[in-house]
Image 1 (cartoon, helix red, strand yellow):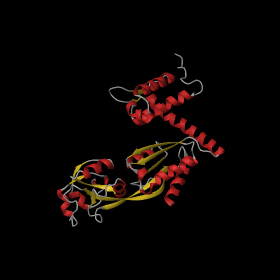
Image 2 (tube, one colour):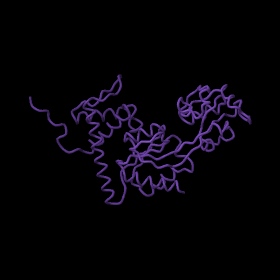
Image 3 (tube, helix red, strand yellow):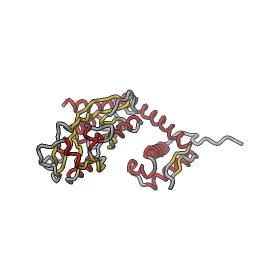
Image 4 (cartoon, helix red, strand yellow):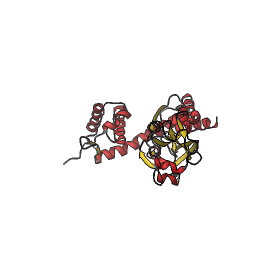
Length: 307
């Protein structure tokens, strides 16, 4: 029995690279449907691209259907090999950029929710400055939860993240940016609204909306263990909506309350007792695929901090 003919006997074409990029996006998104938003392509188009790649490689790369999305062994090999391929392309592009002193390529950023409008608009100023200095670089920004931002940087899914770093990672470089003050609030319709003298024990009779520092083991105060955590809202807007409704107490960033114009609708409860600060930090790997773009963006961030 003869050996099987090589699936890629010649050079890789632009089409091959495009199909591989689509395949990588599907794998990293966890399926075809989940990749639609990221790729801005219809489900059927993505499915056709995957089929075309399978035909080109003469391999079954993944199982897709009612049982869900799952890579085959061949699919895992191709996905891992694609990392090496595109890293090599990025290294080549980086060296050419250095030669011409003109940045091209991509900069992939992951930001925590509500970060673009953060204190003094540090991110906005940095993005504006970077776009002036590197107009040929394509910027790709996604918004994630704080934990997911860190994971995205660690997994090489993005080049740089800005988030609250809950622990130290030796493989990550850090650039401190700014702090935000977190306070406990009630809405205008709540029984505590307008009350000047509030005792901590009074809070036990009211309902709270969950947030990270109210979770077991992360409590901002021992008092939290006696509170009635009655609702969940992972995004700040949803949490604010519950608090504004007058039936829940919850924690929000002070600068967002001001920025949203809710100063007259929300009241901080015992702000000296129930408060903490989040420090936002830019994080990136020591060896990034787009190292030159990351270095320039960090310079722009530092300049924005120093303003």
